[in-house]
Length: 280
Ligand SMILES: NC(=O)c1ccc[n+]([C@@H]2O[C@H](COP(=O)([O-])OP(=O)(O)OC[C@H]3O[C@@H](n4cnc5c(N)ncnc54)[C@H](OP(=O)(O)O)[C@@H]3O)[C@@H](O)[C@H]2O)c1
Image (cartoon, rainbow, N blue to C red):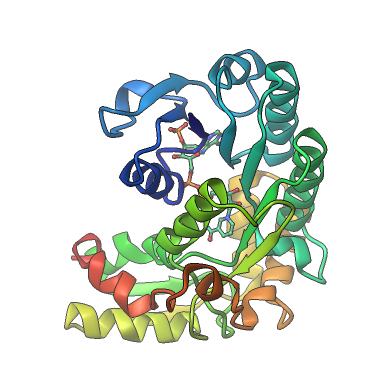
């Protein structure tokens, strides 16, 4: 039995599908099991990683887990670690972390994922860390404005990076859960090509067959937007400045994903073509 948290999300859902295709029994965790929309063969349990009693119950009989932490990442890591200790028999853990943990510019996203890696590595020795850069699917942030106004506004920097397909991240996760040789490893996962946000919009234009207006917010505007969402201007400024740094870890293509999967990772154009309907 393999447990998947964040199973209704962009990577988790693909991990569930990948495991089912290989014939594994999958138990999923969702805060809203009734609307999870997962295949009927998946046992869906209510909960979130920080909920120790719910996770302890969900981990019963589970030997491997794919862990996704969203929201208060550190609190969720602590909760899941406590539940894993209580449940006792978890042998293999694969964490969806972030390449922000190796970002030389300190910021909240890197700090919280680094803490989560440490907490979960102590709970389950030889855990495997997946450290992706930004997902192709982040451009869904533009979907509503592209549909409604034909424009996209880039909020966090426009420097080259190599976005990765969440489905490829999930494929690496499935390999790490089901194959030997991944214990204690950390994989940096990027897509196969460097693109700016402007380059991504040009790909979307070609895929959609229409022009899209594009502009880039100032750093001050981005800080204001994230500060309004989080209510924490200091953290918002640290995060935005880190994301504008030319040293972002995903500014270089990593070979890890294609080496592990034995094929090239999916391009942004492939992702855009597969998700075209969300932009029209
Ligand atoms: N997006 C990126 O570019 C990117 C890049 C690198 C790393 N990451 C990391 O990957 C992980 C997944 O990120 P994501 O954006 O792709 O997540 P996501 O797929 O949007 O969310 C995964 C699941 O988490 C649950 N969830 C959402 N918000 C929550 C909250 N506030 N508290 C508790 N549970 C919540 C939801 O499941 P239920 O409603 O079913 O409970 C959701 O389906 C995060 O740790 C993120 O930092 C993301």
